[in-house]
Structures are given as structure tokens and as C-alpha cells.
Amino acid sequence: MSSIAFFAPLQAKEVDRGIRIVAESGESFCLYKGYYALVVGVSEYDEWPDLPNAAKDALEVASALESLGVNVRLLLDPTYRQLNDAFKETTFHIGQEQNLAIILYFAGHGETLELADGTELGYIIPKDCPLKRADPVGFDDKAISMKEIESLALKVKSMHVLMVFDSCFSGSLFNLVRAAPVDITEKSAMPVRQFVTAGGAGEQVPDRSVFKIVFLDGIKGYADLNGDGYVTGSELGMHIQDKVVNYTRGGQHPQYGKINNPKLDKGDFVFRLAGPGAIVEEPGKASISVESNVDRATVFVDGMEVGLAPFVHVTLSPGEHHIEVTKEGYEPYRRSIQLEASLSLRIYADLREMIPGIEQLSLDKESEAEKDKIFTNTIGMKFVLIPAGTFTMGSPPDEKERDSDEKQHLVTLRKSFYMQTTEVTQYQWKKAMGKNPSHFTNCGENCPLEMVSWNDVQRFIGKLNQIEDTDKYRLPTEAEWEYACRAGTTTAFYTGNCISVNQANYNGQQPYKSCPKGNYRRNPAVIGAFPPNQWGLYLMHGNVWEWCQDWHGEYPSHHVADPEGPSSGDTRVLRGGSWFSPARDLRSACRGRYAPVSRDDDIGFRLVRDP
Image 1: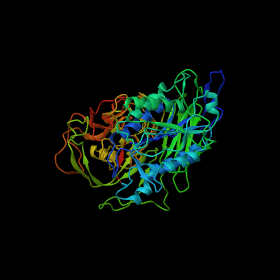
Image 2: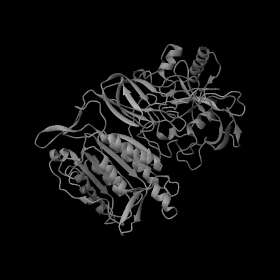
Image 3: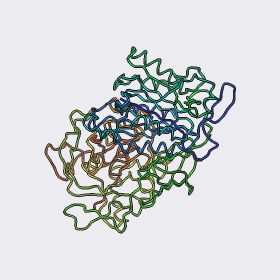
Image 4: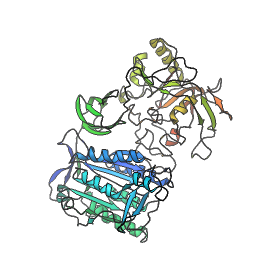
């Protein structure tokens, strides 16, 4: 297994704000504007053996870094193109700001190639890389060598860069030099490129990584060897080398050092710990992180350009702000947000390509007319077209923490349908009904509506159909909901067999299976705060439970078409889990149920519309 970590500074709106430190001399000075981490884990490979713990390690590292105040982008099971694009974004966009600190962590396979001069070159392996022995040309095209990693590190303009490898490749890492720790004022003043690797040449690193455990302990403070409240790259390397050799009884010999370049070996990377001396000089401030599916889209905040997607971090004052993400050829993304002091908000801008004329798609064989893929109605509800298809509904017998009412069976949905991309918001409900029944009104109008019964939803649907002069709005059937949630996936979640608090809003203190814990927000999140699934639907996992049309009942054992559930019952189906739920309730197959007259502050809904 392999791991890489880059650390370089973040984009910030106010250059005079940032993380300040206090040296032993009592001098206070700005260290970085902030930290950014790209955390990558590859567990499920196309041709290589799977590494079950790689994605878990990435999730655990991401959670630990977030607890230290690092802004984290998590990338699981990337292809070569996705991984290469993420590396370049880190290098050429985020890493071009001099006074920031960036982290890239990679967990996955590594490999070694012997060169003509007898030396060995190490590689990291993305999801779709062929085996070296089966396809050497394809391997060379998609494996990423340590020479390429070194080149990227040199192209980063950020003053301090640290790369950490927990890997099973051999060969010398880079041409490294050692340096003894010095006073922190000297460390932060000079540029540096530092590297740590989990073992010496020829040593194999197990999937269950002792190195990862020691690395996490180190950045949490165990590597603060001089007790000054900070962990430097040199201290971290010394800590890892000492502990891993001891814990593995000499089976692994980590290596650490600085790049052998006279202009890049004088400084020392610094981790700020949550202790004395570490001061974030941003009193009363808030921040947003804007991500997008389109590279180099321009991000505007309150009419001012602040950076280029796919990742932009901005520090803002509390209050209302207007976000816009644009790129030629795409429909602009616009959103208003209300920020509170010390709040950090993630926004995912899903830009849709504009097609000249009227964009059309054949719905199914029975359709007499073609419809647009996406539309927004008169009260701002956005819908995306879900194609007809067949899928396996329910969970397999070996899915962990499954319930007995999740029997697997084939379902065919013969007609396409539109599904709302988000849960119905408090604004949308008020627009139609006039009064907001939500408990979490302080969350804002872009938060999901809650405290509504199934019967309340029927009244909303009637009102909306009246406003739109149609009869096509309704709740999704349970089959439509699960089909849309899965979006072609067969795993426990549409994120894979693990889910993290970076991907959904739930009780992170109750994770799924052996997945790592995360924070528990204790309230709903604004719509669009997390990345969508493969079909452009947001928060199908977590945030609020969602009402479905069906009565709850036993599944059939045979293949069915367009099921609508039992004709009667005592409880209606709920799907998706909520901010209050343990991770198991967020599974794509998990079925909740509630009396149709009942309300709660973690129950909402989204609608579908027939074409």
C-alpha cells in the first residue's frame, strides 16, 4: 500500500489574516494563511488486488487533518485521469499561492521498475492502471513515477511542501539530505520540500499500516519532540523512523529528509497543534470552500473574482453572501448563503453544459415527445431526468448491518422520470404554502424543510400542481428512490462501501462497519453542501429522511416492473437517513417507516415529476 501527503497553502481572501505562531523568543508572526489537503485512497482496482484498508486509511487521515483545521478534499478510487487532474490542480492552482500549506495523501498500490542502469524507480498506482507484467506500455502510461512526483513538488510555489509515502515500492525515494531541527522562526522563513517514506529499498509495507498509525499520532502531537506546540517535518520524520522500526520489530525502516537542492532544503514544514502557541487570527470570521465538476470555472463571491475551480477556499465576514461559478459553455451556478461566525461551509457547484437550441433526450419507447434533461420550476425546484432501467433492489445477504426487510429482487422502471436534485427547501415550501413549519429555521432558507408529515406533503403537492397548472408532481415510489440513489452503483452507499462526514451529513460518531469516525453536526446542512451522486442528486444519503409514496411492506421475490408497494398499511416509507442517524441508516437499501400523520425535525422530502 502507498500513501503520499503534500502540504501547501490555501487561497484566502484576506492576506493579512492567517495562522500565527509564537516562537520561544516570544516573537509572533504569520506562519501560513491556512492548510489544504488532497487525500486520496484507492481500495478497488480494475486489475490489481483490492486493498480494503487503503480507502479506510484515507478517510481516517482526512478526518484527523480536518480536526487540526486543515481544509480537506477527499478523492476515493480515482482513475489515472482523475488522479493526474487532482495532482495538477494542487500543483498549478492551489500551490501557486506562496504563503499557504497543501497536503496530498495517497493510499494505494505501489510498484517498482528496474531501469537500464540497474537503479529502481518507484510508482504509485491509480485504479485503472494495468499490471506491469501484463501490459508494460499501459503501465507506463498510467502509473505515476516518483520522478513525476518530484517534478510536481518543484513546480509548487508554496514555500513549504511535505510528501509522505506509505508504500510498497522499492528504490531510493529522492536525493535527500538530513537537517537537525532548529528554532521555529528559522523553519518557517525558508522554503523546503520534505519527504517521508514508510520503508527502505526492497521492504514490503503491509495493507494494515503501522506507518499510518504512527503518522497520525505524530501530527496529533506525539512528534512534538521539543514541546513547543508545533510538529515540524523533521520532528515527524524522526518520530516515524523511531516508532515504526520499534513496532515492526525491524521489519520496516522509514526514511525521511529534504530534497537535495540548495534553494529548497533550508526550511522545515510546520504543523500547528491545538495547543498553546497556535493562534488562528481570524476572530469572528467564517469561510467557504467551493468545489466544482468543471476545471477552471471562475468563482465569484459578492461579485468579486476569488479563484478558479475545482477548489477555492475563501475567508469571509459573517452575514449574507452571493456565490456564482461560471465558465463559458456552461449554465452558471448561483447561490445566496447566510454565514455565521466561525462557520465553515462546503459548496459544490455542479455546472451543466449548455447545448445550442433545445437540449433533448428520448425518454422511453412510449414517449411521444422528447424532453429536456434538466429544468427548474417556478418556485426554484431543480429537477434532473432519471433514465428508465433495471436494477437489483435491496441489499445482499452479506451486507453489514442490513435489515431483514431488504430482500434483493430485480426491478424494472419502464419510464423515465424527473427527480428533484435536492430536498425541498424551507424557501420553496414558504413560496408555495406561506408558512415555514421547520424546527431549524436558523439554518436558513436553503436548508431542507423538516417537521412535515406524509399528509402535509400531499397538501404541498396539491398546491404546487395548482401553481404549475399540472398534475405531474408527486412523491417518488420507494423503487424510484433507491434506483435514483444508487445511480448505477451496487455498493452499500453510492460513495462505495464506506461513507464519511465529508460526503454526507449524519452522526459521524456512529460510523459504518470499520470505517473511521467523524464529527457529528447535530443539525441539517444547507442543500448542495456535499458532492452529488453520479446522476446529479444531492444528499440522498443523510441530512433528512425523505418520504416516499409507498406503504411499507414485504418485498416480492420475483422480478417486478414499476412497483408501487402494498395497497394499504400502517406506515409510509422513509429513505436516506438523516443528520441524527448512524451511518448504517444511510445505506442505499435501508428502509425507514413512520405513520403518515407524524412529524419530526429530521424528516423532509423531495419530489419527482412525470415527463
